[in-house]
Amino acid sequence: MPREQKTLNELFRAEALSFPKYALNEPPARTRLHQNEMLLLTQSEREELIAVLARSAENGFAINTYPSLQPERLLSAFARSLDVSPENIEVTAGSSQALTLLAESLFASGRRVAITSPSFSLYAHLARLYGSEVTPIELDENFEFSPRSLFSAQVLDSDVAIICSPNNPTGTTMSYETILEFADQFKGVLVVDEAYFEFFAPQGGVSCVGLATQRNNVIVLRTMSKAWAGAGLRVGAMVAHRDVISIFSALKPPYSIAWPSEIMAAYLLSEKVKETQSRVQTTIAQVGDLQTLLKSFPAVECLADSRANFVFFRTTQAAQLEDALVRKGFLIRRYTGGRLNDCVRISMPPSEQFECLKTSLSEVLS
Image 1: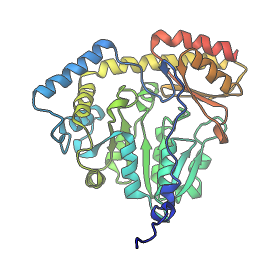
Image 2: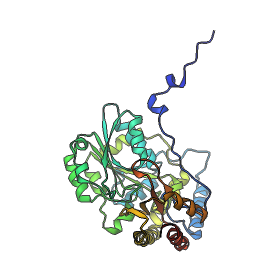
Image 3: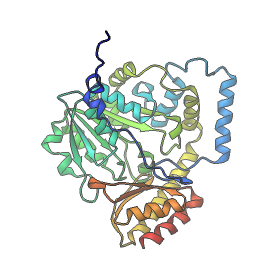
Image 4: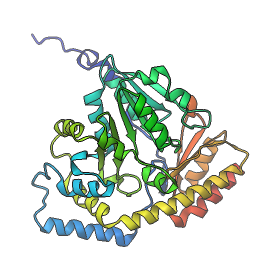
């Protein structure tokens, strides 16, 4: 007689059963402004990348063989881009894999993880999945970093601290001097997520990459999903002391980077620096223009000082704004519930659609 089958509650860990599925409300729209993706590459740039990929295929790359165990070409390109040694970088399948590696190596039952709040939800989800206690590093009422929260005893006593600067979803930043002061006092592992740093650098931002290569308890995350307009490539990087990188290199599953991603990402990092910088400057100007416009609307109650590729604000007309923009072909991110209730995040559109976005915002919020 067959034994009675166990239930899912008996088979799976409670943390896994309660892990929230990553989901977005995505009504039909022509222009995606809800996931912080970068401006579209031009048609000529897309054709150029296709040609690069085609040449690589002719030179022996094929889908029937595994990609490089270590994507040396991409590793070298990323190292040159960040002005560090290749031994200080581990290339990952987007920041999501980097965060998973951090969770596997640092999060555990009985450990405490301090996390910017509000911030990217995956940080806290992974901490809880691995049984860690989450301590929030609360932003203030203007969504700015608060030294009082950052330097609290509970945060300083944590085993891991994750600071996203510029922060997602607010775009607000923590100065390098404050991060350095915190790193000097913090005894655990400090992770600085610099996914949006390329937009902050021209505005006076100082990266923690150099700090990460010198200390064994500081790790910096970078990605090609934002400024480099490579979200579909799923390529990111961890920067740390070489002894720390060796740990992550051992933990990372082999063949994580598909060869088309390696080829195209390395090409972008090596050959498209000026074009990327130009797009970043265009985006910074758009964000500034849109923030000036939003300040003039009485319906905008709290406008964050974003240094990323998006604007973030609160308005009681958030639902109406989302509906109106969807009708205009724009998909934005509206938050409901908790501290972010009635908050909206809007990434910058292609230049030819920027005036239409401004007009649409004015029609609802003015």
